[in-house]
Amino acid sequence: MHTLAEKRREFKKLHEAGCLVLPNPWDIGSARYLQGLGFKALATTSAGAAFALGYADNEVPLDVMLHHLRDIAKAVDVPVSADFGNCFAHDPKTVGTNVRAAIETGVAGVSIEDNSGDRNKPLYDLAHAVERVKAAVSAVEHSGTGVVLTARAENFLVGKPDLNDAIERIRAYADAGAHCLYIPGIKTREQIAAVVKAVAPKPVNVLVGGPSEFTVQDLAALGVRRISTGSGLARVAWGGFVRAAGQLAQGGRFDGFKDSASHPELNKFFHEDLARRPKP
Image (cartoon, rainbow, N blue to C red; front, side, top):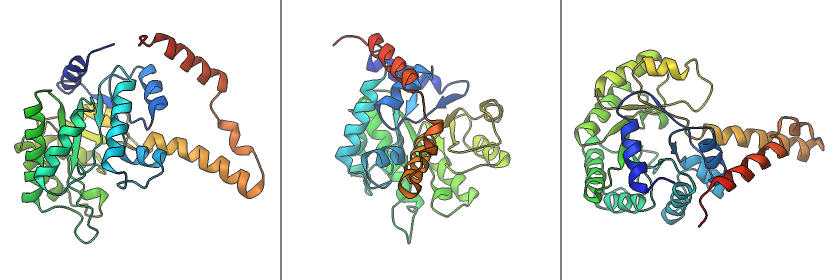
């Protein structure tokens, strides 16, 4: 078992070179399984957590999300980064307060988005967004924990796919002190290369939440330092469940069960995994 300080140091080091694959579990079981596959770090998924907890994405209350972060961070021996949405606040002061609360859950990283949640104006004005990032950076620095702060430009996820504006935003967030930059939704080789170049040498995270023409090696060759899967793995699991349950409900058929994971294999994994965990 690594100490929390060791996990945080390791997470920061993983951003310094190479390409980190950061899959996103949605509960303790999926987190333990991903750790068992050898991934060096994990990240939570706001959407995956929301669906598992019975909420729509971006509707999970702060206290519920903090409890979820604590559960995942405590469940594994590898560093965990928190998908923390827009930090559950509009004003910079509350952003700082909430980032401190996230850090206290035991995570090694935390993210901040510029999605305002307002359908009429889905992105914060850049000046306000920068102040929010500065507040998050200040919270991290005052914690003395070395937590990695990732700042996200949400243009492509809120129907504003302006790459130039998104790049202007992440440059400003990098200047404000963010450690890692992220424009979820970019997909082409040209877009990815432009984003990596724009904030170099700071690391860039690329989201691959569905089928992609790229491999990990392809993205690494483009200079991507971190790859996350967002709600992709959770939606894969939900896809199997929705199809099987729908066939059962609508046609009384059990065909959807044919691709289910093996009970003996899962049982063996979690039995052996539990035996490896330190005794309380």
